[in-house]
Amino acid sequence: MLHKKVTVVIPTYNRAHLIKDAVESVLNQTYQDFELIVIDDGSTDNTREVLAVYKDKLTYIYQDNQGRSAARNHGIKLAQGEYIAFLDSDDVWFPDKLERQVPILESAPPDVVLVHGYKCIVDKNLQPIPGWELKLRRLYAQAEKGEETYESYLRFACIFTSTILVRKTAIIEIGCYDISIPALQDLDLYLRLLLKGYNFAFISEPPLMKYRWHENNTAPRSSNYGYVQVYEKHLTECLKLGDSMRIAKA
Image (cartoon, rainbow, N blue to C red; front, side):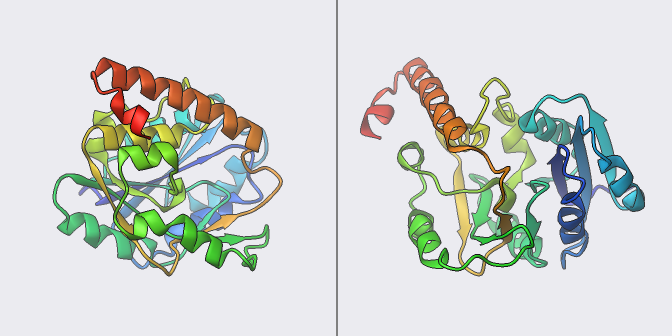
């Protein structure tokens, strides 16, 4: 069987009430050269039953609960695609997400390993929450200017996992997600890619995905602790490289 160009990985945990929207948004992509892998990270609800109707359209893998990053790493290990896209199980892609991204990596130089873009913030019913448009443009200003660097990401990073498409070779080279960090493993991943000398590409508006705002989003306290751990890790990494000034400049 011929391998697909893209592997889409959806990690999920007890989101039987939301997972169908995520899966449907992948299956309805205008770009269809992909495989879809759902990693169920130990759900105790009826996620398996909800996904049973898609048995011919996706690969369903159940694992004991180990956390979202471990689930993503499991998906990466199974991936056969040249590129990997991640979608959180409470988020939804716009139909042309992959169609807009794949040609960018196809034509980009080898050092450009990731492409990402805007998100749209929606409520639990996937209806846009007004007032975010200007805020998001300000957040993405750095990416719009092509100024995404290791130092700038240490100061502030505006990149969301459900918007990225990344070369599988690059993400495997740096060791995938660090499951020892309890939060912001995605920020650590992007920093390690940039520290390796890789570059990112950015797609301007319209957005690539809908970010669902609900009561179970990552808590600020968890994020703050994650920042501390990520920064401590990268101080150590830069010291090993004899390049501590990169941390100091940031």
